[in-house]
Length: 80
Image (cartoon, rainbow, N blue to C red; front, side):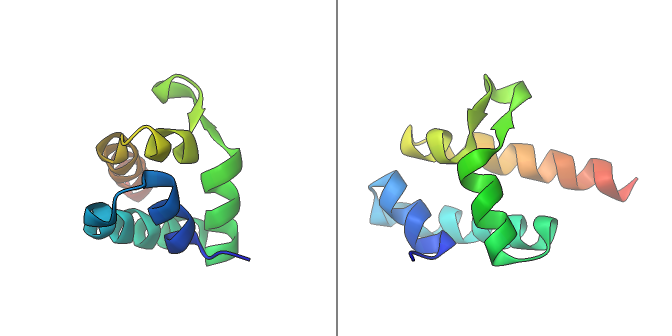
């Protein structure tokens, strides 16, 4: 099975996006508690505020910044 980072790099189709992929993967793993849960969330969970698209769909559309901004704002909300 492909790991989360490899899946995201494959989905993005752009090796130059690796720093953003790493940041998203790390944030997701911290947010969900494990790489397996992060992977599942990445491929299955629609994000209501982002047109009900999954993070996987957004990465495939090269919208990594939207995913990262969502995760950062969600992380901030969880801390307050």
